Image (cartoon, rainbow, N blue to C red; front, top):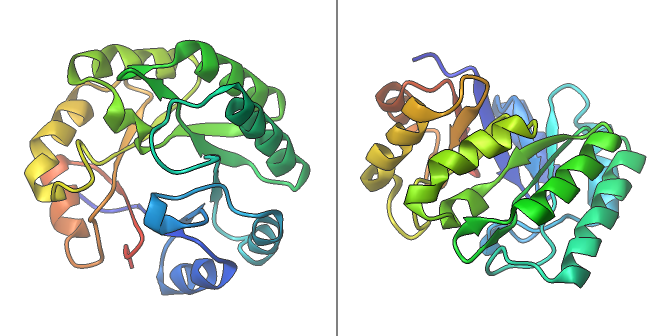
Length: 211
């Protein structure tokens, strides 16, 4: 399978520039990648959107590390972040709210609606992997129905090597709604990306060392 999109997870404008120059053709902008990626600061967003104007930039919306069950204050922070990203000229955002191993449909519907009002395209990030396996199919279809057409997944716990989780990712690839792209990530790099893409039959891959 020919890889058409190599999405690089970065935490600075310098890293975004380096990855773009090496061949990454989509950027996921974060802070604190060691925590799985958090919302970047305003200056980083501005500088990256100015510097990286030739490939899409997805901005992380995640107020803290840890789980994805956010309280009301944190959810308000996420709404404020969406407004800020839109005001700065961003077009793509990634977030996820999962509570008790279920997609938090109430919080997600409000965030997605707000993003849509701001003309922001929404991607579901690896919070998806916290959803119980037997609930992931319905979650994919719910996301599709609400305009979320890309899901980033490791297929299971991040500490588990991605090659061990390829069967789980394959199930998602095979059963995803027609308009949903499954984007594998977490442990994918320049050396193994083609093998993983061929195995799964996907054309998009994600990683901090993807190029």
